[in-house]
Amino acid sequence: MVQSSHKNYKWIVLTLVVVSSFMAILDVNIVTVAMPKMMSHFGINVTDVEWVMIAYTITYSIVILPMIFIRRKFGIKYPFIISIIIFVVGSALCGISVSFPELVIFRIIQAIGGAGLTPTGLNLLAEVFPPEERGEAMGIWSIGAMVAPAIGPTLGGFLVDYVNWRWIFYVNVPIGIISLLSAFMILTKDIPIVKYIKRFDYIGFAFIALFLGFLLYALNEGQTFGWHSPVIIQSEVISGFCFVFFLISQIFASNPILNLEVFSSYNFVVSSIINMIRAVGIFGAMFLLPLFLENILSYNAMHAGILMAPTAISVAVVSPFSGKISDRIGPKYPLFIGLLIVAWSMFLFKNISLNTSLYEIVVNQLIRGVGIGLLNAPVMSAALNSVKKELIPEVSALIPVTLQIGASFGIAYVGNELEVRQVYHLNQYARDINPASPVFHQVMGFLQSDLINKAPSYFKMSNIFPLPKFAFLDTIAQMYAVTASYGDAFAILGYITLGGALVAFLMKNR
Image (cartoon, rainbow, N blue to C red; front, side, top):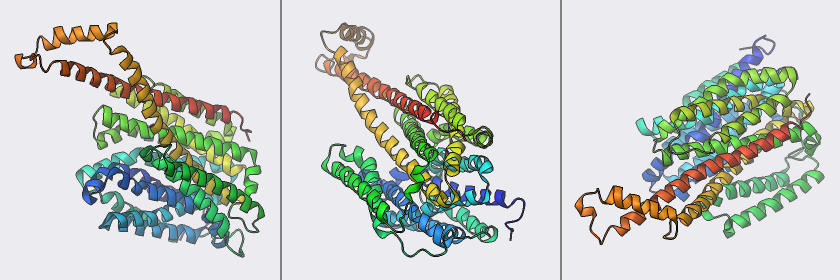
């Protein structure tokens, strides 16, 4: 057994936390490419299969905050170990599920374990690393945290296309068993912050659970039901009221589930805002690019995933250095420069089209990875170092919660913008495709002289060739509108990320 006094103890613990966090975060993203297979296997529609993701996301976000209480009462070691066990068991059950309702229930079990791994892992790193080394530690941790979303679609695509969709869950079992045995052998520190807490804040937990549940449901299902549909509006209203009631309950609770004192730290508030903005930009782009590659360029899931890999490579190379830089000069300037680079990578895709080469896509992904790598360690170390030790459990829980909310908002917002901008461009192109437009006559002349006149005789039948001409124009207009909407969506993410850079410049650099 490794002793806590061992000179390499903290680095061994870091390795354990990286592997465990990688496993949990990978599972959030690897599932997306298997949804079509699940639909055909269980005989369900798109609306139903989305619950494989929604159930995990909502449960994951809700369970994180109670980990503050659990850490204080029981320490870190055993909650960490139990979280691994729950996650591994949930993964195995997902793999053997025989019906779709079973799969959703087992995903909830899996999410409970995953939610326990992230905050306890961050808390553990904050315990074993002093403040002046946390940037480096978070840089290494973020390799797993940010590489997992990038390689998830690639690994998932391979397993779905060449093995079996159930292996996206089975793959967690051997990794989890190794992590479990390592945790038993490695973790020696297990010191509760408060040895005895009278009772759990059930009222506060109920309000925060309803707030996050209805909010994430609205963000995930808004595109499906429509943002102005009654169920989405009701969810948003209930979520808002529950958030207000949660804040009131925390003010008067004797043992609040969340100590609101954490928000008195200026740098923590700034770090949380940056954390949400970077999630909007990063996960919004991770949502957009595979859609473009698969729907517009007709790549399969695995090939689209491979084109996402350059981001993971850049993140893995840059993250450790950004942590060291943050420890030396403070988090402000790495955050500012990182957000500028991410924004730049978004603007490079504002004119993305069918003519965009693979070289341009790969280079753009490498550039974005550099920016992401500069962000991860500074934003987390800034948050952890901005509060006293007693409030670290709050920070360790709020970092993944704000990241998840930002990611869900980013995906929902950019998905809605895709539709809005597509309609806008379609109207612009339709304005030119009418008999009164010079463009219309030029295109008609081209069709008449170069296509229809040179086509085989059976295409020249007078009773059919008005239809091909107009159908062709309609198809071209829709194609251009859809393609242009992707460029607009990337540009919007660029402006949002630029806003994050301005916020980063307000951070106190200490």
